[in-house]
Image 1 (cartoon, rainbow, N blue to C red):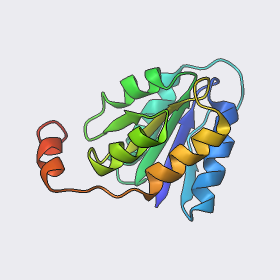
Image 2: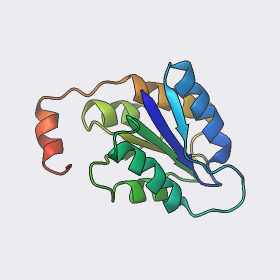
Image 3: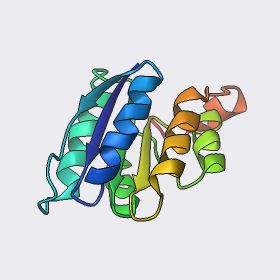
Image 4: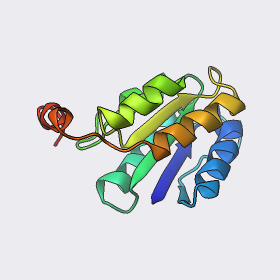
Length: 142
């Protein structure tokens, strides 16, 4: 898979950790920035990642900011994007299994690097269960 990754200044330190895990799992990283600790506006990076997923240029996306809240709010404004804010393994697994989340959001000031690695591993290796969940997703996702 090709995974688009984006962050703001609050998530920049975690971005390389996450990208490393994505690569270790055999996936390609499409880094949409940011590239420094200078203050930036997170909606620009959420938009860049979501556009890649919407266009089919990337299979999934990962967004990082200080809390993950802002990124998830912005991402879910885009048609066809099902962004999940995950801060532990259960929601990471269920966001894929039941909700077919195509964008993972995490807060770098909430989740440490070790937990973030495990969340990304879980999220990328969990398949969508389909069935009754597909019916529900079709009710809100286009």
